[in-house]
Length: 129
Figure 1 (cartoon, helix red, strand yellow):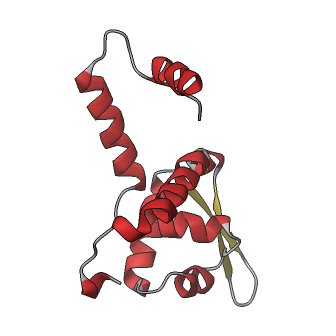
Figure 2: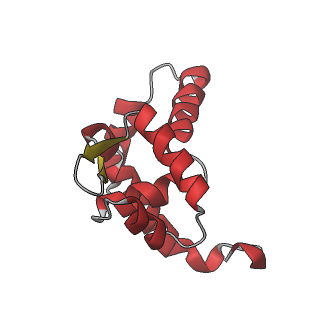
């Protein structure tokens, strides 16, 4: 991104005069919606075409059935995903990203880009890998 384009984007996002309170609230709102260890991996999994519970679970190493169930319920309550039940035998349940959820697309892409660029600089505890 060029300096001029970045400057324009900053001017569009930040108020003049700047309000630390408003900026902090916006950051906290964003972190609330997509924060936590599992939210973004679940969104990424669903956006990659894993729509059934077991598909999502298998695509995210380390997530428990209980945690996935809890996260999906909360994400549905926050309108990030849509749960569709089809009355077949057995019942089919599918999860899809909502338009609201897809507004995080640019954020997720930038986070992936940043993570790839800085992977070697990140120090993790051995038990977390």
